[in-house]
Image: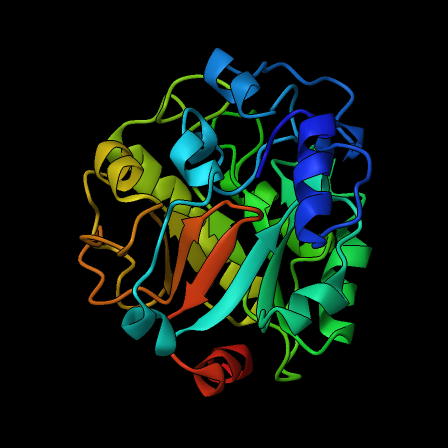
Length: 285
């Protein structure tokens, strides 16, 4: 959940989930010449400069019913799923013991964005979830509109926490490719150009790690910016973002989703489509 810090801290304290800390804009930016600024919508979602973006930021804009916790998933649907969360620098130091006690068994942490930003809370979040017993993964917020290439962004991600090891508790990296918080929805790319950018990033990630990365997106963005491409539905697990009682119609010909981000209240919550053994299987490769 992304709000101004005092409101967020009050809400978080009420749920006793997260230790309030500095907001995302305190995180580390490594590019000395940023040349993009957040849109007004992004600013309403708490994104004030390069690096502040997070998975599902656009869904937080004007979603008071979601922030009020009115998204409900049927007990029958939830019973066959494994609870998880995703976090970024905005959450600061996460109370992983509380998350574990609430039933969370897997987590993804934002590691990088573009080639200019790394999450200064990454070690506490990524290693902390692992130490609590969770199966963990890292994600990269893609910025195809920035001056660096898809290859360079994949390299940067792997070099700053996005690697993979076959320890049974590390999930493959996730490519967060969604609405552009810094300008045009599709980052200035044609549909075919966007598919090429995504393929290039995924190929480089697989070359470096041996794994097919997870793709996080929304049905609307995928249709708008890739022409609903079916290029990746046989190789890359789908993480669908939809704040509703069901994941809805899936994009890109994916026959099923692997993860589903279904709410942001009081933190970004997700389901893995299967029991814990399936989470482990994805981690093992």
